[in-house]
Length: 114
Length: 116
Image 1 (cartoon, rainbow over the protein chains, first blue to last red):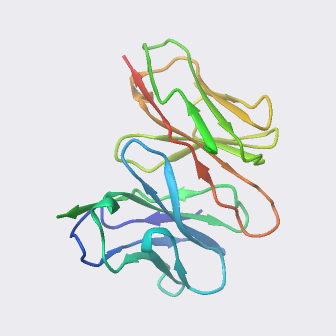
Image 2: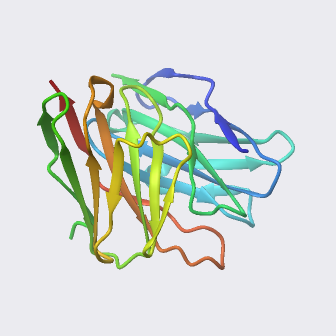
């Protein structure tokens, strides 16, 4: 069975400062990793995904994430945040055998301070 | 050009009164999913359809049922809603190629269910 841990439930960051949202996963097989963003009262939108290849993945809205197999991590980063980045961010994992099933972390609420 | 549409966006029902939530998609995707998301929690998969094949999660209560009459539509039926079923219900779709690595799941805006 696979699992995802997002250690930080809330992250406050000043506008234009860099941010890192942490995600660690546990799985015994090859995994596929995702970051989704959820704005208030909306569904989830895909930010980026790692399927294979380059471990540095670039996504929408200036976000990027790095897959680190040895540390079983997939941390999300942005060099300079904007007020509009205020949202809930979910890390998710699926595996090679049950590709249709996503397991989500508990989410990190990112709050941008003006 | 909405791709995954959920109706209604907000639904209020009474304790024990059956309710149906609707999801439609214009992506012609093979797989459709229903998730339950309670306040400040991660989305939890209830079940999914791969074409017409229904896949129920082991811990999904019997109170929750689903129908997929065609490729475009999928319904979530809650037979006897309890107070604990109040949540956001998210529908998602994916291409479901079954060959290359997994496809992206595209989510609808969700239906927020209130149980009085």
